Image (cartoon, rainbow, N blue to C red; front, side, top):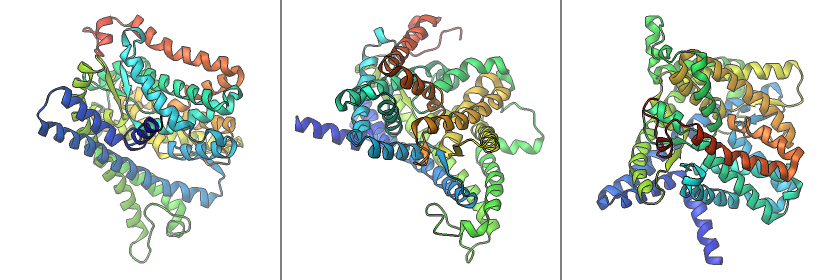
Length: 486
């Protein structure tokens, strides 16, 4: 038993929680099952792993560029608040669990393994479960397992038994990962023209909703690429130019308000690029900060192209040999390349405005919990929503739905922080799926206890059955394809 535990722990720490190597392993297995020559197997493993590592560099750079500004805002205005960001949320959830429920400190990691294997089981029995997707973004699973652990043991006292509580968290995590990613198959196939992957991130329910609602808001022909703009604005169809310009506006305003005194104070800005007035003017520091964002976004895109290409090819082997008909659910950034060029930055900007409007309303109405915007939700959620909305309903849908997302992220984030008692821990998960549906789930847990937990699990199990029942072409659904007339 000790050997098995050691092996599982090693696999969890070194593979499952390291998505780059997990992707590389999937590519390796897929190419072996496809009987590729050894050098192609090795090449695929390297490109898949390195591609994801490149994506991580880009994503980490985006976060590190924005986070010091949040810290400086908190310092200047003496704001006691919670940051809606999955990394802040992970830390807050773990700290609260360690203080209030120390016996459950290791629950999230064990539950992650239970949930992952449950996902495999549901896909293996897809003819019964109607689940086709395998959630493979391990770092996201870690964040979500921590938040769901806190929700479950805090709000359902009957599950504070270590064994049953861990199993319960693992089951509901696995159901969420399998079912929510399954909900994105058709939307992502439409967006990508049949690229063969789904989304396994933090916006699956939102993507499903956007795909259904966007055509009712606008016309897909009026997308951001076809939007009639003054000629000089054509430069913003280039992602690098658009991102650098928008960030110059946002960071320019924020950094001007904060001033060089704060941004050069090493006691306040403990991470990211510190302004050094002896070596650079503040004006050039602002420009460098804005343009650095654009650099990291470009790096992220390159990594996505690299690993998605290998993973899509390799998964043909996994699908055919091990999990017939299954589809990999990958990082949401994989979808950005398939949308209109300006869509990601457009969604970020509109979502950010929605967040700022709601934060101002929290201040005006003196809400006891003040939310500070976090980079990951404001960028990744709203960028994805804009990409999918623009594809189905054009720029009008992208505007409306990205703005609504920004409002919900802040408003329901404040509700969640109050409900879970996280105001003193500095953060909450913040991504749109952890506002809707997880905040309503949390209230169901609180008021219905174990019965509510069971009802949420049944809700997850019913969703793919309804998807299958409503599909126009049952065979196409099971194969992860769109009906011929779609």
